[in-house]
Image (cartoon, rainbow, N blue to C red; front, side, top):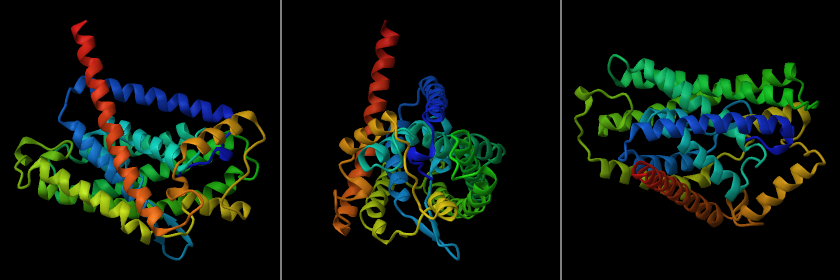
Amino acid sequence: MHMADALLSSAVAGGMYACSLVAAGYALRKVQQERNDKILPVMGVMGAFVFAVQMLNFTIPGTGSSGHLCGGMLLAAVVGPYAAFLTMIGVLLIQCLLFADGGLLALGANIWNMAFYGCFVGGGVIWALAMRSGMTRTKIIIASVLGSVLSLQLGAFSVSVETLLSGITQLPFAAFLPFMQPIHLAIGLVEGAITAAVLVFLFAARPSLLWCAEESESASSVSLKNVLTIMGAAAVVLAGGLSLLASELPDGLEWSLERMTGSTELESADSSVYALSEAVQSVTALLPDYNFAGSESAAGTSFAGVVGAVIVMLLILAGGKVLKSFRGNHEQA
């Protein structure tokens, strides 16, 4: 669901940056208030895992489309909605700058569409409500599916509204929406199943790792270090190996665009703002489209996947260290 710059006017793109920045500021303040220093390595490893899983596009049978995990719901169920949102920003930022996945002008919209709903609606509302009276495997599965489906539906609807407000005449709202919502319903169901599988595993291995777990559920058969090692190793295998098996069919947004316009992409407006965005990404995107520049090799995809997962983890860890240092200096002052 990564939007390209061509799908947004500069005014709408700026508005979505503002919305995402406000949400990020609020999430940052809440994370600072929680003062849970132990959560940082979990954010780093789970961020790398979500990046890796996002590389695995799965085919939606009978449609000619594919989809991939967004990951906000999964992250929120582990580290809570606020830390999850900040982690998702790290993932989307690296995807945008290093791999040119989603436009730089559209980054604010992509953060809102792909991270806000999954973290704050799927995790902060659906997951939190489902786990109020105790955590069970059945509740985990139901919450994962409901949260993922609702998050994807809201994200798809937001994309349609954003193109409407941007005046994209090739995508009239009444015609575009009936393509976007059903295909993302199917994608949401698959994301829900994947999310449920991962969370059920974590619940079995270390229940206390999950957000909203009660003290009675804190007994752990696997140490935190071992769980994070497993998830980190899984990220490397997924990004560096299984990503080679990812579907090459257009994702839900591209599929909808193709049905509307005959192409999976639109031309950007002839404006200095769009030219600047493209110029910046042409410099920062050292591994465009998750490969070596000008290449479509399997080795390039594997390399890009592993490098991306590692950089996401390092970015989140470094950001957390800076935040902790800033907080310490502020308290001393």
